[in-house]
Image 1 (spheres, protein in one colour):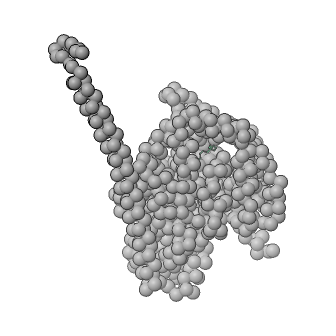
Image 2 (cartoon, rainbow, N blue to C red):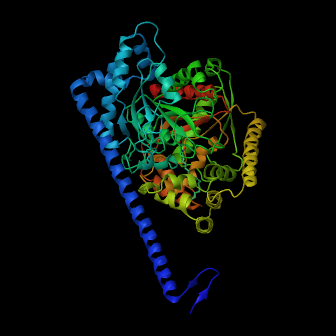
Image 3 (cartoon, rainbow, N blue to C red):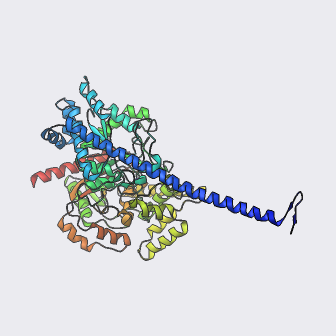
Length: 590
Ligand SMILES: CCCCCCCC/C=C\CCCCCCCC(=O)NCCO
């Protein structure tokens, strides 16, 4: 048979060979594609392995170095026991040398990371800086000689900021970020980089490059995340002051689970330039940078030292508002709202007691405490998901293409990031019917992406409306501040956060409204709390999981959050300091 085209004729033989050629080309392309995939994945695995070995080696080298140059155990422990105010005073008046303080903290950090895996690598330039500090004459800067640890996603010149993702290995940063520069200018010595979960969008603590960080109070449990290494290192005594980031609770969750203090400032109060987040463009609910410390003095010192012209010059988007001591030192009695239950899942009895005890302290100090009802928490969660996953999670899946997905991240990655919309809807249906919980469906549908610009603008308007509603609710009760649980529960076993992830409402609420929120350790889980856990209401799937995973948590730290309207960081810190002081006085008397 012949086909006649306008310019040439085609016979059967030609047709046949055309088919063969097409098939051959197709299978070549396919196998090329498959091979390329296998090859890329192989390269990535090699890269991860090499980076992990480099990191381990650097830590080991520091350990060996300290064997020869370390302090005596007694001298080391005296330094490690000092609260921030004393450490700062002694560095200022010269009775402590910066190099000794550095060596004390280096050795403690290297010691604790052996079991807890909180350090990613030491910052070797610290030594030189400490020596320079000790040679300095004249007026000393406020952070003179204070060692500072940094979450791995803080850009430090010459080091990678991977966020636990292989794609970003071998991309050494050209420069320190604004906070690191300002800290150095103020005399601080960045000395350790700390671990985080892959992508930082979970409150776990593991990634394929650096492995898993454990809780300093119970190594079978997680330290929370995503500033996991910071919470763990400070909680274990290996650092006095550290810095992390927080979009949904990543400073406050590890602070709560490791029993340390932190402050998530209003986004904009201090610079957020130069931290690695894959979804930097999602600015509606933006990431905050902030300090973690052993005590409130550490947070205050950090904020005072950062809110200076040096930072305002380096990042002109930051409003030049210095630290306002008149607010921090004020004694005016306040009206403070409180809640134990955010209206989605109740907090466990220990967390509820934490808030109750802080309430009693504040009342005793002359403040008025009023019960506060959080408006529409389902809306807050939906808005959060729309704002951070509004691209249908493409940013995250692109960042992890060819990467090894960490076991602790697999479920989140599969269901929230990767699954097609229909599967998200099916899963949402399951949560609603079997789990008696309508909220995951809203979150999952949001994570399937916003479909048009006009829908996107609708989200912007909804967010503004929610923020206004929250503001009006506070105004109606004439509230100056709010206290609420540090989180819904204490530390749970490693790798289980996905089973309780709705609990993130307790922290990400304050990201959605962009209010400054601090977290303060106030108590520990008691036998009595554990007994009361038996009556914990388990209406939803998440609540059931919380109850199950919270068993055996006696002795774990419990924090309370302190919250104030935007740009009132000083007020948050004032209340935290007041409660911290009362707790210490109480302990001394009992
Ligand atoms: C299966 C559906 C679940 C629905 C219910 C819960 C919604 C939670 C959504 C998403 C979970 C996000 C967890 C965020 C953790 C903190 C992240 C952070 O702060 N990272 C800072 C980086 O700098």
